[in-house]
Image 1 (cartoon, rainbow, N blue to C red):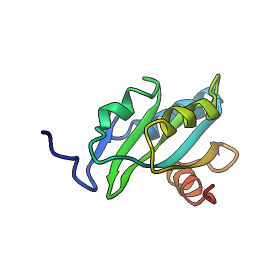
Image 2 (spheres, one colour):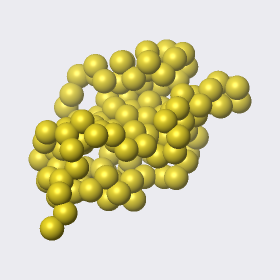
Image 3 (cartoon, rainbow, N blue to C red):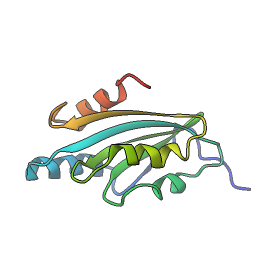
Amino acid sequence: MSASPRVGATWLMGPADERERHLMRCRRRGERAWVVVARLGTPAALRPEQILARLRLTDSLSIRRLRDGYEIAGTLDAVNFDREAFERRLRGLAPRGADFGWARFPDDGATLDVLLEKAGSVERR
């Protein structure tokens, strides 16, 4: 029997600063990007690897363990991106519910901190 991930522990797809680098690449190419903050109410037995398996390899995300689930925050290319499909894939892992907040680069801000703050403060459904 494996132990649950520690509350507050964080897992990353790629290097720690990849979310910021992803945004810089979009800025340089003149492309739009989405920044997401999602909170998933998941069973304690769910592993971060199971969440990562539902995401694109090109996404730049962090996953942080919360007391009652996970928080996902990151940068995603806007080209050929389907927000509804992204939410649907993650909702399938969250029997206790899922909330998503979104911000769009550059419309909602120019820095990762501003975009994450905006996405994290979006009214929850």
